[in-house]
Image (cartoon, rainbow, N blue to C red; front, side, top):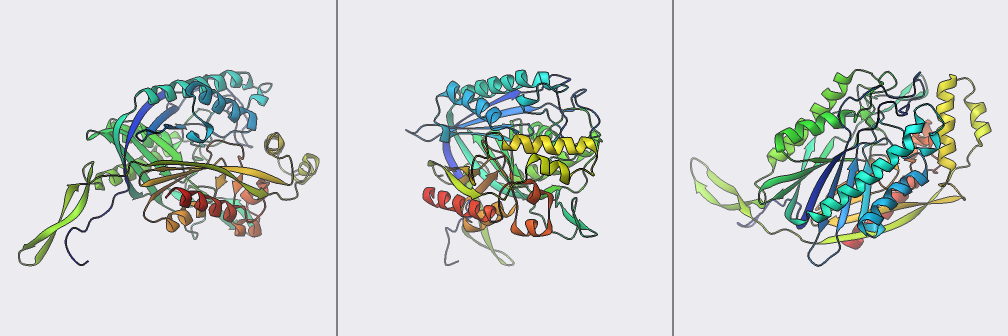
Length: 455
C-alpha cells in the first residue's frame, strides 16, 4: 500500500432487475421413486413447498436475460427438458442463449420423465411437466415486466455441510462421506437490492440434496427448503438457489427419512448465507481507506463509501465436444447387475435406457455451456454434474470476479463429469457416466475460454 484511496472491491453490477416467485408443489400421488431400495413409488404428501424463482436482468440498451431456479430432481430424457425450456422461450421471445433453467437436484422430488407415465404415479407426470412449464413461463414474464434499476453485489461465505462422498471401504468405492477427503465449503451469495431494500438473494452452494432417501415418502426440497425459509424470513426477499459443482459432494449425514435432519442441514447453510450477507457493507458502498487517526496507535480508517458498479451484461453459449466410453448394451448391464436386488437393478437399467434416448447418437457428444457476465460476476451453467474441481479451478483462474457455477442447468447432458482419479478408483460417478476420462478438464478449459471472451 502506497497511499490512501485503497479500496476493498466487492464484485457488483448496476443493472435493471426483476424477480418473480411461484409455488410448484406436485399433486400427492405423483411418482417420486428416485432410489433403488425404495419399496414404494408414489408420494404420500409434502414436506416443504417446492418453489420456482425467476430473475430477469438487463443492461441499458440491451436484451434481457432470465435465470430460473427450481426445486426439482433431474431431467431423465432430453425431450422433457427441451419441452419445458421451449415453452419458456416461446412465452418470452428470448433467444436460447439468454435463458437458463437450473434445478436444485433434490432427490425427494417428483420424477421428471413423461416416459414413466405407465408406471405407478407416472400418470401425473405429463400434467406436472405442463404445470412446471406454465409456471416457469408466467414467472419469467412477470420478472421481465418488473425490470427496474437494482444493484447486485456478491459475498463469499463458508459452510461445512458438504463432505466428500468418495469413500473406499475394503477396496470398494462407496458413495458415502469420506472423512479424510477435503470438500469445497464455499458459499457464494448474491445480494440483489433496489434503493437499499432487499429484492432477492442468490445462493450458490455445491452439495447433493440427498439427505432424504428411500425411507422418506414425502416430496421435499431437502435442505434447500429450510435454508430458503430461514433466509427469506430474515431478508424479506425470495431466494434463488443454484446447485454448484457437487458431483462428489453431499451432506455428511444423509440417506435418512428423518425430515428434521434435512431441516437441520438447511439451517446450517441458511446461517452461513446470513453471515455472508451481514459481512457486506451497505448496498452501493465499498470499504475505502480514508485516512489515519492518531491514537495510542496510528489507526487506519476503513469506511463504507459510495462506489460505481459495472453495468455490463455479456452472454456466450457454445458446446464442447466430449468423448464417450465404450458403452455396454442394456443386456450386458443387466448381466453385470444380476446379483443386486431386483428393485435397484430395475432403477439402474431404467436410468441407462433414458440416458441413451436422444443424448447419445455417435462416438462423441456436444455438451452445451452457458456463460453470462453480470457486471463483476460470471455465471457458468451446464446440464451435467461436474465435480467441484470445475468451480475451484475457474475461481482460481478469475479471482477478480464472483464465479458462480451451476450444475443441472438447461440440457441435454444430464451426466457426471468426474475427476480422472474417480475413474481409476471405480467410483459410481465414473461407471455411471458415458463420458470418457478427461471430460472434466475439457469442460474447464472450454468454460475458461468463454469467460475470457466476456471479461
